Image (cartoon, rainbow, N blue to C red; front, side, top):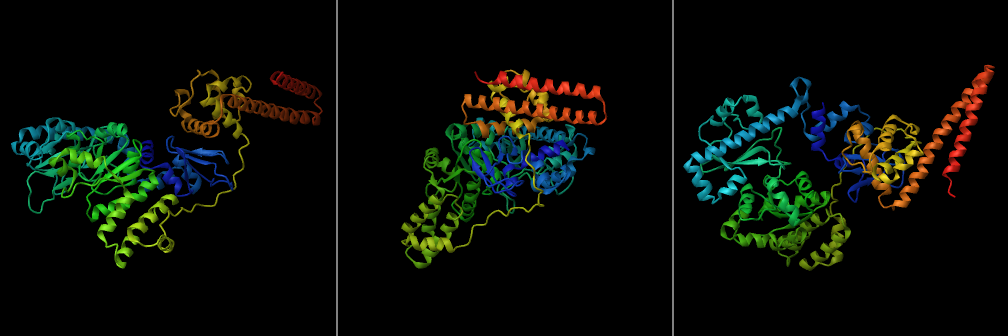
Length: 590
């Protein structure tokens, strides 16, 4: 089930899953909340999206998304996997052992099949004069852009691609699973007589196709896309990202358009930080993928009802993800970026470089749509605008836009605030209920994790392992980390553990998170002093345990009148006490 586990993990955001149980607030790169395991009043529960782990300082628990659901729902691993698979839309039946190697192998086969299909469509384009005229004449695409996007042509013949793939030893089932088989009959192609544009993932691997008619036929859809498959999910796919990501990083903004051909036209004229979603269906997954490259997102949706609705829906999503939205307005009379580029590429460049804040743009749009001089117009404008403003997280932003709304409508700020306060509440996420948890006793050895965290991230503290030997630590996994660090070089550990620690991957990440959160702002001297103190605590704890064990055995020997055993134990006890006192003197400052 490892393949299933990784597929589920890749489809879910850790902070979203945990946020259904624990209210979280952004804290730099991480999220913080109150522990669900203890009755703490100061948040010490941390979620790290980067490391894909959570850690609760108050109970010293931590782990990944599966361990969290197991803890909160009282489930075993299989139960947590099934719950999260339903949430992620993953069909676990595909990952059963009888599937000969699981989905990883199947995915690789489908990627090979789709890459071969893209090559076939490219060759088909070169052989069809009508398709060549459409691509290079009517669409005015350059040879370079056709190569970059791997644009091709699906022949009119009903089973041309199918027959080609079968000759390459792909099965009917694989062709269907790749989204290339028609539902109208076995052996028929999904796409016929269309310009083919491959849909690629962030690494440029083909995962599907969008197909455009080259002849306008009655009752035929202009575009047909690959259905959802094991590889392609339109709610997650960002078209053109593999070709746009470097420009997005460099220019620190991303432009989202509605159509794939808008992206292609933009790239052809050198405007490359442009990507597309499936129409106006912008999702949190789309914005999160782009937020890794830039926090500045510029939307270029059509100014029709669908585009306006999509813009309104995008605001709370952007608030959740933490990106800044702005709107690109096209010159009057131009319907989309491709149309604008065909007229003059500079018009599209100017539009991109002159974005308007999304809420400003919406208020201006409402003021154009409804008459701000009439009572009904004021009601409509304020109703629509306040529905957007209520979804903003920052009260200062809300105040700014309410003042602006007052200026647009002529209504007093006080009246608009009254309407704001009496309007419908913005829906908030309903926290999932979970079985009551037993009170978690504090982990008496949590300080050992703090010492190992310091030594993992700050190598200069590792010399304290001369004081606290690896076998002084309280558990096997702590001893394993301490043993490695005692002989490691002077490099800090990172999120990819070295080979000797790969079985402790999650624990290593928890230690690094602990070190960053607790000691990240400390100076070198303070970290060293803390490590020395904690190392003494480890040694003292071990000595205490050894002393308690000797005393217990001594009492047993005395009760059994075993004089020789009792004498030996007294000698061992005296030696331990002297050794401990001697060690304390050596560590004392002069």
